[in-house]
Amino acid sequence: MFEGFGVGLTVTQLGVDRGPAVPGARASRLSEVLPVEAWSDGEKAFELTRIQRFRAMLDAYEAVVVVGLAADRPDALDPQPGDRGAGVNARSPIPGTSEFFVDELAAVTNSSARMAGRLAEQSWVLIERLPAVWAALADGELDTARARVFVDVLGSTGAGVPEAVVPLVLPEAAGLSLGRLRARLLKAVLAVDEEFAEQVRAAAQAQTDVRLYPTLPGMSELATELPAPVAAACWTTIDQLAWLRKVDGDPRPIGQLRALTHADLILRPWDDSRPPVTAVLTVTAPLPSLTGGAAGLEPGEVNGRPITAAHLRELLTQLDALCPGGLQAPTGGSLQVAVTDGDGALLATTGRRELERIARHGCPEHPQASCGCAVLDRPPPVDRYLPTPAQRRFSETRDRTCRHPGCGQPVARVDLDHVVPYGDGGETDCDNLCCLCRRHHRLKTHAPGWRFVLTPRGVLRVTTPSGITRTTRPPGLRDRIEQRALPAPPPPPAPPDEPPPF
Image (cartoon, rainbow, N blue to C red):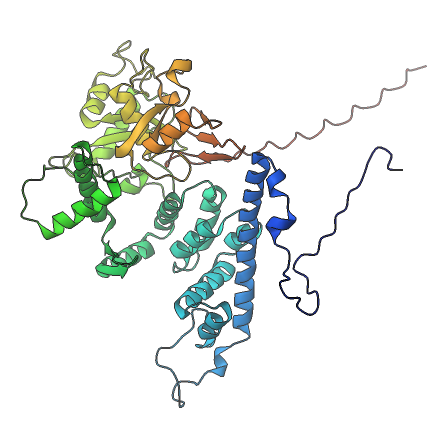
């Protein structure tokens, strides 16, 4: 009946109570039961991905158990206001739960009350406010770290906000770094409930502070919480001064140089021997959100390809409507315009003066007609190794950080790398150039077995030597939702042939 097939069965005792303890005896360990040494690198990598899925499933299961235990400890058991022993402003992170539940949870999990309170809050938010995120975690489709980002950003939002934001962001969450996921969620919250987001921002800004945390023996962490633009400007200034030290030959790690530079700026503000540097901030704003146009996450766009002179004149009109006298560069700074399509894919980058010049003169082939010819596009390929300044500007605007999965190195400290090496026939073209930090540039060039593929829309696929593929997308690029066409209904049956008139 089963000719040609064989069945192998192995039964192993794992963690089973074997009765009275035998001196020196213990349950088998997984690493002793599973033949890890005999696996190939691909099998080991696959097993690691399974471990991450199982860990996510366990964390989702833990959330259910925590909320279930909380339900067994209602706040009706606590001393009520006015009663003897009633707490003052005492509450549990899970509504309707005893104020002492966190203490019990801390004892059960052998953790501090603060950690237990955080676990209780995350568990409740996941199950009650973010059920789709919990389901993705329970199915192993989303890891715990990214689920916590959802909790952090959406846990305190108003009613209806999670329901509107989660379907927009969850499908792409597993492919985003933690920083990009947080930014994507914050942007979505702003689009759905701008008033609430502004209240949160104002409240957070009012609580800015400088804090000191002990870390390793003899070391402490100095943390300054500031409004995002100010913090970004401070970090950029510190970073540039630290790299100047590095360029001058200081052999210490760049992180140590940043820390020393930060201390120098605070403790020796009068020191004018440091070279002047300029903080660089990139502000990315969809045009509809600036002009009060279409709501939601739609990026600014000029209607599709090609970008014509008429489209540019329309864009200039919208830009000039933003502020009296037109949108101009700040004093001592510069203004760059990035034009995207409806999916957020970068089409072109340009400056204000170039934009005006092209819009004024129009198509050089048909100067007097609205011909629809393209007048602005991505930089053309060049027959040389070094990218042009226009190619660098375009690629850095598209990528914004190192594109290697999980890396967020700022674009100011990255290399513009040929994905297909120039020596192997790769073109110096924006479709073959992407931003990689020096470490990941070296990995791509020298580490055996890695494969990098860049699509024309800027999506980078990186495959490890063990066969695991991760994908990163340019920050502004949205997923295209493909709607499969429904099959056409079958044609009506042909009428039967009439019998011949005999």
